[in-house]
Structures are given as structure tokens and as C-alpha cells.
Length: 297
Ligand SMILES: [Zn+2]
Image (tube, rainbow, N blue to C red; front, side, top):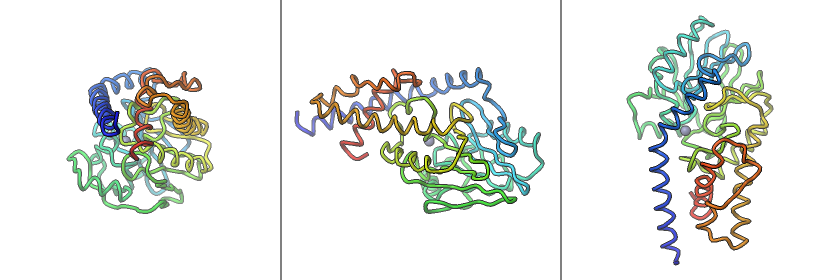
């Protein structure tokens, strides 16, 4: 087969997989919701004296309470935000000063209109995308930050924001609370689970680089946008190693002369067999990494 035919087949397969993934996505979220209900991860979850997670339907926001006001990362949607606001009023009478968007994706940043007199902040890359792709449920960004890092200081507490390069979506921000040694990671870390299907809007190599930079931070507690409210630094290393081991195994199979079209359906990574969705998503993960290796995206 010549290269054009192979390329055509690969693109057709990816379009087909994308369509299947999208049609199953709502089903998947409902399943996730059930899991989280059984794990009792809905509502307000106390992490430290001043740091909380708020969860609903498999999505989590970060809440940081300071002496001068409150910072929230990700409103998620209107219902989530209304419930989160009610929950916050039970534990603090401080005003909500900042609402920060973790990245550009609507499923994490809708519902911000619930918070009045609050400054909405995002990385400029997320802001620029939102200007081009407006959504009436997503509140407009008031202030942007640019470059690799910025710091918000409120009531003597510090929240550091990092942009470690391409990983997922636009303007993906890693949140670091140095005084509590906590990092908050949205979409770029779902612990002990394979990356979602075809890794939609992920840049696998950039994702790996971002996680390596996260590992350089001095932290004891991880907080997540999905699956679990909190976790451990080891879970970050696990996913970074998975991405590297997947790439390495693909290269080994290619060097062994395996037909590239057969690699996704035959690849095995025994170390990760107990990760959630290993059987379901390894093949799609492999396609995604192979496409990046072969075509640069
Ligand atoms: Zn996302």
C-alpha cells in the first residue's frame, strides 16, 4: 500500500472512532456519576482547613478560602455552581473574589453567571479560544494571564498558576498551593485509569512533558477534576509512565516488524492491566499516540 492509502485508512478509522466515542460519551458520564455516588464524592469534600473540593456528576471544582475572600477553580455548570455556592455559604461568609477557568472546555467552565461580583480569570489562550467559540452558558473572561506562570495572593495565601506547554485543550493551567503542598489537575490526570478513549484534544507528547513538570513541584496531595477528589503524587508518576511505556512499546513493535495497522489491536501493557478501562481504551490510546508519532498531531 502506498502512503496516501495508509493515511486515508488511518484518518477514516479515527473519524469512525471519534463518532463512536461521542455517541457513548453521555452514557459514560452517567456511569461515572453512579460510581461517584457510591463513592460518596458528591458535595463539599474537605481537603485541609482552607481547601475544599466540590463534586457532582463526576466533576470536581477547587475551593480555596482565605481571610480576604474565596477563590474557585471551574464552575462546571449552572446546577453544580448553584449547589457549590449554597455549600460554601455553610462554611464561610467571605466573598468569592476569583473564578478561574482551568482550560477552555465548556464542560468544566459553564455556569459562572451564578457568581456575581467575581472576577473571572483564565490563561489568554483559553480566553482567545472562547472569544472565537462563544457559548451563552460560559461567562466571559474578565482578566487573563499569559506566559508560563503567575501568582495570585489573597488574604496572605498564595495560589500559583502554571502553563507547562501543550497538553490538553487551550490554556491548560496547573494549580499549585505551596503553603498546603497541593496541586489541582483537571483532565490531565485521572488516577489509575487509562486516558479517555482517543485522548480528545490531548497532545500526548506535550502531556507527558507537562506531567514531568508537575512532578518537579513540591507537593503531598493531588486534587483532580475527575474521578477522585484527592490522591497522591505517585498517581501522577503512574500516568506519566503509562504514556511513556505506551510510546516505547509502539516503537518496539514497529522495530520488530509488526504491521503498524495491527499494533493497536495487539499491543499489551501488562503493568497497567488493573487500570480502569484497560481493555476498552488501550487500542484507542495506541491509535492516538501512533497518529502523533506519524503525523505530528
Ligand atoms: Zn478538557
